[in-house]
Length: 359
Image (tube, rainbow, N blue to C red):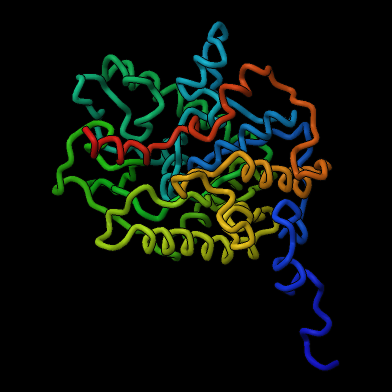
């Protein structure tokens, strides 16, 4: 043997499996440790990109588990406007691992944040932990609190009864309460409330923070759902804005690198936790930027279909067509799929930052 490299599989060689490979033929998934079956209840949460995973699971006829699906007389479009079915629960985007941990703790009565309702400049009420789930906000704090109570009850049920949980890690940057450490999906004052530096602080979570959060969540979920499996992905979507005094490209690189490193550290320790390389498929240099829209941030539908074609192939044993698109007959009404189709329709709290700067 000349060296260990001479006996390694072909997929370890850049010039054999990356350079010169057609974009649509790229498949960086070597092996996935277990399979998801159509009857298993698959729940999703995470950043904006996770919404695409939910849409394609539903489209492919898998048991996409939704515990908050809206009033039965509501149209698919109306439900989408109110963020029913966007994720398995109506919790909006969970950008950070700390949000995930605190959502679980809140659902099981282990943590009750002291933060009160936020009021918008129009006088409506928003939930600080779900600021973008109710168009134009709630009419009153009482209405918001009632909605939150049933929401957390549904989330509790979701964690107790799901079979597979897919979580997409999005950001390391966040704003939190100085009082009790409660983490928000958006900076106070952007989507409601008033920013007060004595009440709120910026935090940029480290690799170790993310590792500890993930391990905490794994332990809590295993206690109440011992057979559940977890799939982790990292969002390829860059930061809309950074709160650090540095270029947003530099902050984006840190955030994604820290999250990818954290996932890499924890996956090898747990048999029931696996990683799927959405981030690598979208951002890999082999695409030459083809999977990003003109804003260099939004992921095109072509890119999403490449990711989900491979996801269904390796995770769910669904054979994709030669083009990489999902070769499964849609199991949901066409009007729902149309409402969720375009990249601009993903609900993203970060977009509120840019909007607030223009107002």
